[in-house]
Length: 249
Ligand code: URA
Image (tube, rainbow, N blue to C red):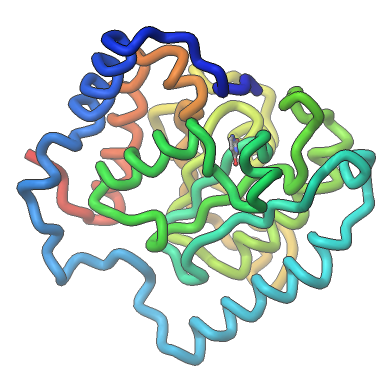
């Protein structure tokens, strides 16, 4: 994973990239469009069900994730990063692993890549609080190195459990490690993205359940390769269409 801190762009090109991102992500249209209140931003569960899912996530975090010492990352992390968002989200976004800022704050996607993810979610007409944002790994690999196979194998059951509790309508896998882990494939992200795949829950009360999964590019990659933003936006628009969220004109 590339750490995007310390970007050396000069101001004009950084500004251009911002504007280009906004344009490609459709943000130009959104401030003019109020999302109709009839639009379902989260699953329509009742208060009891929402409390049960919130409690389930909290128990998983406190009872398993925070005390996990299954791999060496337990010795190098500042803290675990469980992920955050709505317990009855319609969409779960899954990234690779916490970076420097996430390890420091204990929150997923709060660095530069996270800021772009926030804008991608806003371009869909949603807020971060409407969705759930997590990672394959709950601990930062030193120097943001790519997660090792055994770290993924040890950690991904927590992600599967999170998905089982939230039971989202769609999963968006950000980048190759997330897509490959969730789909149990070695295919690259360029090959996987752009169409829905089936994520199959193998364990827990919802075992056997299939959830549509859209792989797309990781925001950190999009920061380095802004010309790929159009494809990422197409992927997100397909998710919006699936969820019947209103598309910007
Ligand atoms: N990149 C990720 O994959 N996850 C984060 O939480 C932050 C950056």
